[in-house]
Amino acid sequence: MGIAEWVEIVALMLLPTMLVAGALHAGPAVRAVRRFVTTRSADTQLHPTHPPIERLAADLRRLLERYETVKRTADLPMRAQRLRAVEGAISDCALQTASALDLVCPDRPPRRGLSTTELRRLLLALVDAGLVLPPAVAL
Image 1 (tube, rainbow, N blue to C red):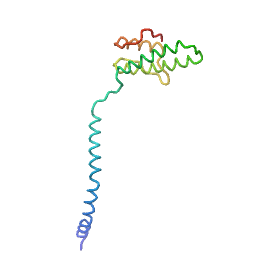
Image 2: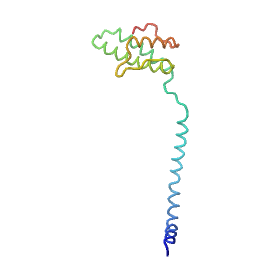
Image 3: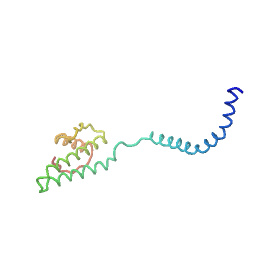
Image 4: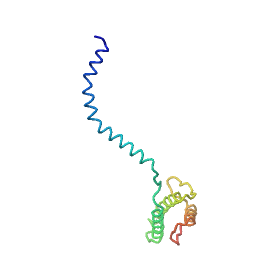
């Protein structure tokens, strides 16, 4: 008996085991392939990279009103900290809104918001682009 005959005998003995294992694992394998294909096709569809402009505008208006409220508070020790925090949030929201409207906007400095003059210019550019903001914003 040669090696070819031994290989043939071993293959015939293992064939039923391989068929049963293939039948048992075919379902999960098919589901995995189907899941891969559907997620792959879903990823090729276009998704917006930013929230809706209406929500960004509403957030910006809310933050500007919050700035005016904090500015009028009587709590002097914490007012400066809160004003800086709200200005940072306004900077983030204004930059995000400007990028959603495809406006040219300055780069945000790391760990702090835009300067007051840059923020004013950006808010004026947003108003010129048609965004409705509260009339009396005294940044």
